[in-house]
Image (tube, rainbow over the protein chains, first blue to last red):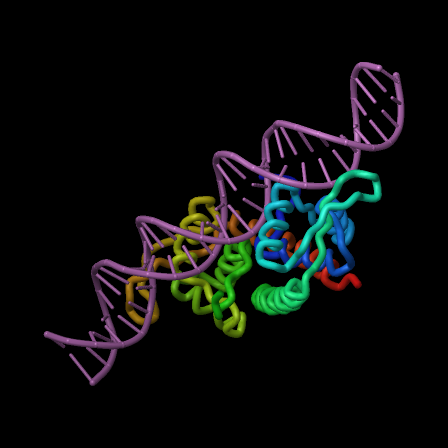
Length: 109
Length: 109
DNA sequence: TAAAGCTTCCTAGATTCTCTACAGGAGATA
DNA sequence: TATCTCCTGTAGAGAATCTAGGAAGCTTTA
């Protein structure tokens, strides 16, 4: 019983990759961006975000390096690798497939 | 690494409720119907389906009774309860919210 | 200068859902 | 009788996310 809506499982990776398509960014920035882009609907919890970033980096879809944020704080900047770009395309088209299929069912009378 | 696409986690309950909106049905029938309605894209595994049916019945969204299928086999027929109908409406609108938000993000340039 | 708050990173543990991989009965068909 | 298909079910595992923390450094305010 909660107020806030959870993410749809399986979409977080795609959203992160998509955010990074706009340019390198640190974790905190990604979560803010996703919230803004979704008009406050999607809220990525930090306990979800950071493990996801590891996953993605381990799989070679992201690379990271330490730097300094706009606010003069230490921050780890992530960016898409070429493999990550490819993965984004794949996940996007899979999302289209699945959400289309679900909508097909929901529209049935 | 698999060929077949998994479901989006969190949507199975909604799909089952939706299928039962068309009338009472047994488990096996539900899985066939979902496959057909989605044009063969969505495939509900039996190991996912039956536990889900229990979950839903336990929460009072479905009721069941044993009967005989069109093929003269013993089958458990499920149907929506009023609470289940309500739940379907809720899950559907939540799906709209989330998928809209995700599409918002994917369309960003 | 002390306190408080925000930014940023991170981890542990639990939960929830779905999948794979089975098992088995019972009618239909040959 | 053998085999096929329909239909129900269970066990165990794995993946993704959540809750609920902790910590450190900068910045603002008292």
